[in-house]
Length: 422
Image (cartoon, rainbow, N blue to C red; front, side, top):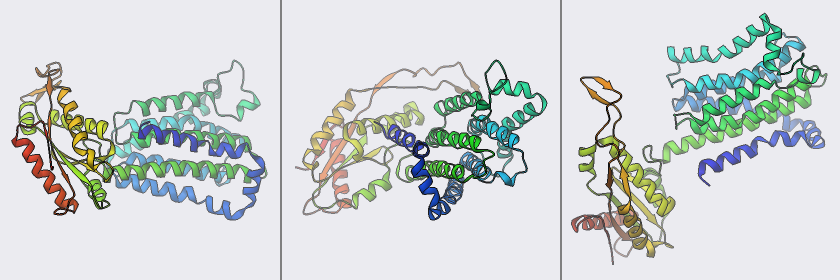
C-alpha cells in the first residue's frame, strides 16, 4: 500500500469517530457531564483551524486559507445559533443550504488557480465561492416550490422527516467535489484536497445532528457532537498540512524522493559499519543538450523511481544528476551486489521521449506541430561508486568522498558499471 493510500485509509477511519459517540449514548452523556473535557475541546477547532489557515498562507496556498476560514465560520454558527436572529424554520433551511452549497464552494475555490492572498484574483475567487450560497438563498426567496423540488426529489411536498434531514442534492454536490479532488491537476494541493474530502463525513454528520436538534431546549448534546465532529476535522487537516510541510522540507520537488537535507540527517544517525553508494547518470549533460531540459527532468524522475523500486527508502537525491544510496550495518555487505542489480536492470529499460506537443516560432505556439523525437526510445545507464566505512574513513563525509572516487573510476573504465572498494 502506498503512503497516500495508507493515510487516506487512516483519515477515513478517523472520520467515523463522531458516529461512534452517536451509537454509544451512555458514553456520550458521561463525557458531556465532564465540563473539563467539553470546555477544553470547544476551543480546539478554533485554535487548530486558525493554525491551519496561517500555515496554508505561509506556503502560498490561499485556497487552504479561505476554505479553513469557512469551516471556522460554520463551526461558530453551529455552536451559537442564537447569535444570528433567525427563526427555527430559517435555521433548518440555512443548514440545508450549507450542506448543499459548501461542496460547490470548495470546488470553485480549488478549481481556480492559486494567487496571492491580497489580490484581485483572490477577491474574485472569494466572490465566486459565495455564488452557490447566494443562488440558493435567491431560489428559496423567489420560488420556494422549485427550491423544495430541487433539494428533495419526491413527487409531493417533503415529509417532516425530510424537512429535518440533509437534502438529496447534497450527495450530488459532494460527488462533484469528489470529481474535482480526483481530477485536480495540482499535485501540490491534492493531499489536502483528499483530506478535505474525507472530512465531509463528520461535517455532514454535524449538520444532520444540528437539523435534528433544532428547537430543543437543551442543546448540550448537539453541541457536543458538533465539537467532536469539528475536532476530528481539525486533527485530520492539521496532520495533512504538517505532512505537506514535512514533504516540502525533506522531499525533492522534482523527483519526489528524499532530498539532500534528509540524507544529511540520516547520515548523522549512522555509526559503526555502513556503506554509501554514489550514482551518476551517464552522459546526462549531452542528453540535456540533445533533447532539452524538460526531457532531462523526466529522466531524473525515471531514474529516481527505478532506484526506489529496487532499493527502497534508502535512496536520496544528492544534487544534479547524482543520487546517494545509504546501506546500514545489516546491508553493507550486499551494497555492491544490490547496486549492480539496480544498474543492470536500468540499462535494460527503454526511456520513451515525450517530446514537445507545442513548438514556438517567433513567439507563437503551434498546438498541432509535433516534436520529431516524440515516442523515440533511448537507453539510460548509470555509473556507481560504492565505499564502506573503515579505519581510514569513518565519518559519512569521508565515505562519500571515497564513494565519489570509485564513481570516477567507474566512469573512467567505460561507464554503466559499479566500482567498489575491495
